[in-house]
Length: 180
Image (cartoon, rainbow, N blue to C red; front, side, top):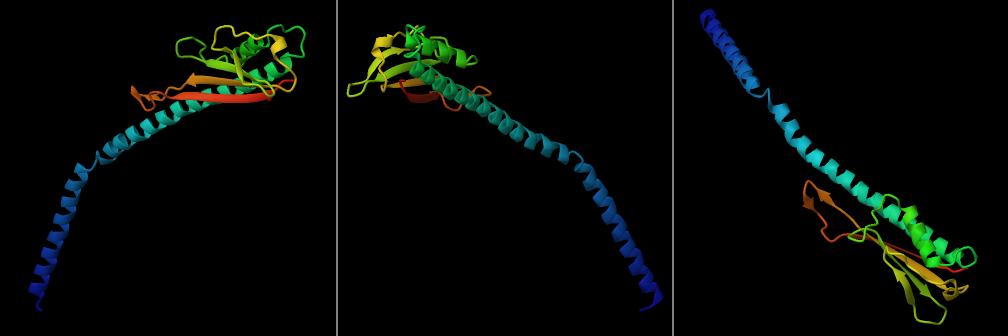
């Protein structure tokens, strides 16, 4: 190989290297907004998932409050018979349920509803009270050893950006206590 041929190859190779690096610069200029576009697309999906998690957290909090209020109401009903100051144990239990769940709406249209059922030993169950309106039962209807069941319902709202994921969703909790 003579010197002339070697210098031509080196010159053309250098030309190719320079052409390739300038082409990369042109392409890199077109990719400047790629990271921003990817972040925008991914952040929308992640934000939607985050809002769904937060909404599910609210529903789960309502369920925990409903379960707690039902348990407290059943406990109040089970010991109300022995308290002479309480003349209406079911109304006392209803008041206790409402006080134990201050963040649950107690409106008659789609709010907290509950029922109190007394299971007497060897008898068919009776339902002396239900709903939010003042329930009533006499102390004489309760006997030691009877079972008092408190069942509560609350509508859940799984609504994310106007889309209802569970349109007829209802939370339910039941606690049964032995009357003392």
